[in-house]
Image (cartoon, rainbow, N blue to C red; front, top):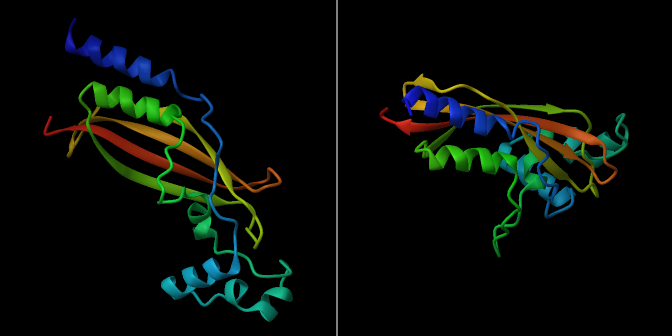
Length: 175
C-alpha cells in the first residue's frame, strides 16, 4: 500500500467520528459567589456585575453573575480523587491519529461564545463532538491533522450557556 493510500485511509477513518455525539459530563461544582470572587481577585477584574451585590441587583440580571470566561471552570472535573471521563468521539479521533504515529498534540486555536450568563446556583454540564478534520498537512512542527472539537455547555435547565471550538493539531514531529 502506498503512503498516499495509508494517509487517505487514516483520514477517512478519523472523519467517521465527525458529528458523533459525545457523552454529557457534569461539572463538579455549582456556580457560587466565593469562587467568582476568587476568580475576580486573581484576574484583577473589578466589573461590578461580578463583585458588587448592590450594583448587580440593580442591573438587568438582578444579581451577581459569573464572568463568562469562567465557563470552563464550572465544567472541569475534580482533581482529586481523579475522575476518568467516559471516552468520546474526540478521544477516539485523537487515539486513531496517535496509533498512526501522530503522537504530539498542540491546541492551535480556541474560540468561545457566550449565550447566557451563569448565576450562583447554576450547574454546568457539557458535551462535545468532532466538528471537522483536515487532510494531512505539513506544518512547521511536522506533518499532521487538524481536528476541530466543538463543546456545548448547558445549565441545569438545558439552556445553552456557551460553546467552545478547539482546533487541535495532532502531528508527527520533524516529519
